Amino acid sequence: MSKHKAFWRYSLCLILMLSLTSCHDFTNSQEVNGGQGVFVIDDQMYINGSAQISLYHNGELIKQNKDVFTKYQGEVNHLGALSGNDRYLFAPAEAFDGNDSINKQVGIYDRHTLKQVKAFPLAKQSGQQECSALAYDDRDHSLWLTQWGDTNSSFYLYHYDLNGQYLGKRKIPPLKWIQGLTVYKNDFYFACDDGDANKDQPDHIYRVSKAGQVKTIRLLDDVYDQGEVEGLSIAHQNLYVLYNRGAKVVDGKVLGLEKGYDHQIHEVYAYKLK
Image (cartoon, rainbow, N blue to C red):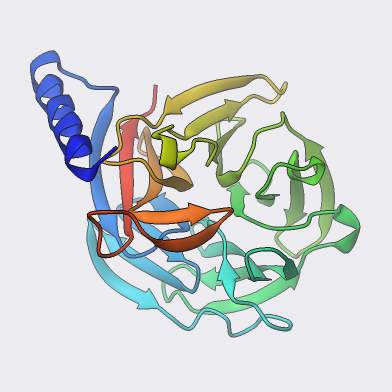
């Protein structure tokens, strides 16, 4: 779909929202400066790209850290979707060249300064081959990690405590191309890049219950233009979804820009959580 057609479709949606009270429970959207993860707490929103972490307060960028690889073991060049709690931010990290992932670790950052505090390596015995997203679980103060892809090892969540001890893995339904993860009220929420933007096919947000039941929470057909979903967060009864558009992406690699774009755009969409 062209950028202009998407604009008019979205404008029509806004008009209907005003006249019919709601349009798919969309609240608002905001352009941000990173395309990997989003974490919302209180009136603050944290965004990370592959090599940066930013802090927004009431929608305004107030702090940024572009020196995020200070305490890792070996080479690291990519951060996946982050999460956090009231003290720290947690981000999966790896050295990634588009095909192979090595030196897989979790980086821990001070939430207020954005500076890295420490890191711990992922357990080799877990079988995890890549680390695309991470979720902090406030039920037991632990971390869950996902693997991007469509292989047997991507159909697990990998579990760690905050000291880096591996707690095991949990089988999940075969969701493909997981880019974001969060935990809310005993359920896992997944952002999956399982639509083909080149064919105008939207991505999905899924909820997986403790019993393993899967429900589609959102079909991302109301974004400005089809692209790739990334991280997600839940706060204030809102679902916050980080979404990228404007780039040609094949197997996780950016191969230029779509027609009508001079740069890739990163946006956070907010939806009322039903």
